[in-house]
Length: 241
Image 1 (tube, rainbow, N blue to C red):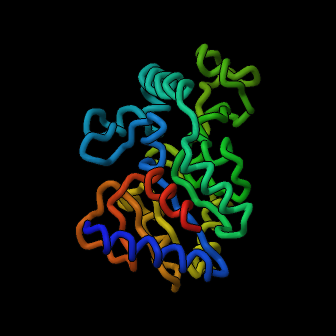
Image 2 (cartoon, helix red, strand yellow):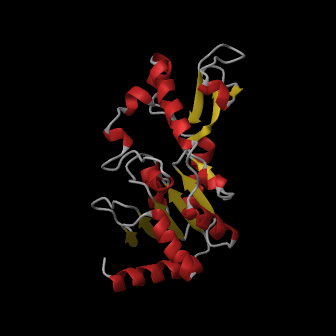
């Protein structure tokens, strides 16, 4: 992208942010790659190497718990050395300043909450919450990592993430839909927009739409597109606000 064109697009986004009455941010795995977390659907993503239906599905939970547990134990332990990067704190600050109104995230790492954002709707759940897969009794991280059974019914424990073959949390999804319908400005960051129904959420807004991602899919139809990493671009915008 030519420098003059890039600066013009940055200025346009700044203007839209300042003029919008209701701005919603939608984030995906690409938002967390700068924190050291591998994404899922890019050229080098996790699902290019591993089969999600064998590891992260309802079927795996019910019929191959050993492999299911091993996969999520690995993910949880790998997260222990990662933390929210500067871009997360910029979004949190923008919320405090009234520049954005809510964040809808596909991410399960809770980095938005770690950075201080308040209105965060986690439509794929949280990898930091645990429960029994049979009776839904709340469990601790330690109980899951140590592969203990549920203290109430002896069922298998699981993280509170949405699995393949499972349903999105109805409350969070309904709020996300309402937020998108209200939005004058939607900023999509770090998602390939290939997973239904999240891929359809930006279409619910009649406002301006901005797409920030390392890889912009062919045929995407946004008012502004930035083929950049999230943290880098958010810092640039924040500097001129």
